[in-house]
Length: 207
Length: 156
Image (cartoon, rainbow over the protein chains, first blue to last red):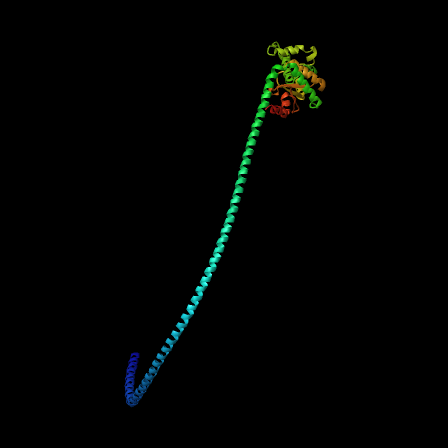
């Protein structure tokens, strides 16, 4: 049953579509028949308008070419005047610049000469000071060295003299020791001991 | 006994040696039995013992021997001596004379020690209680060193 409904509805749809298409074609034919004279008149009007516009455009174009030529002429005149003015200005500036350069050069020469003189004078003074200082330092160093050498000699001399003194005393003691060992009698030695003991007693060494 | 022992002894080392000899001698006499041979002692010690008075060892018996010598040794340790440094040896007689003279001044228990120092040249140096006092010729030379050197320098 549902299949029958589908088939019937499909048939109805196809039929409706065919009817719609035929109706549309009829209406298009009818409309075409009505519009044809209107279109022709519109076309002629449009062509006329276009022709007029074209003539007007050419006129305008001719005028603009003339204007352009005039403008170019004015522009060339102005450019030439401007160039001449620029050249004059440039020449004046260049001349002024050259003068400025010359003046500056002269001034620089003067300053340079003066500075060079000052530098040389200062260098001479510094060199002189340096030489004097070097001489003083050298003298001072030599003096120090001389003093150190003198001190060294003095020390050595003193040491040698002390050594000689030591030897003198040693020789004296040795000589006395040899001589007195032979010459000093027992009585004399005992007398010396007793003398020492008396001295110790007086000094209260033995308490 | 101690004063008699001291009277003929002048140095502490001599005193200690004599005490040692006496102790051994008396031990031999008391405990030696039949074998009392004195040959092992030095002849000078035996001569010294004979020179001592007869009552020198009186009162010492076998019973109190050890105690008596202990007391003597303790007494010796308390003694002080004067060290005399001399350049050459002195004969015992001279040492005795010097000591006796000192004992007159400082009492009977005064001892000396003789030490030899050849560097002293002549005279002597004394040491008492660890202090030295030099009375020698060497000390005199050291004291007069500047004057002596000045004399030598004047000869140059």
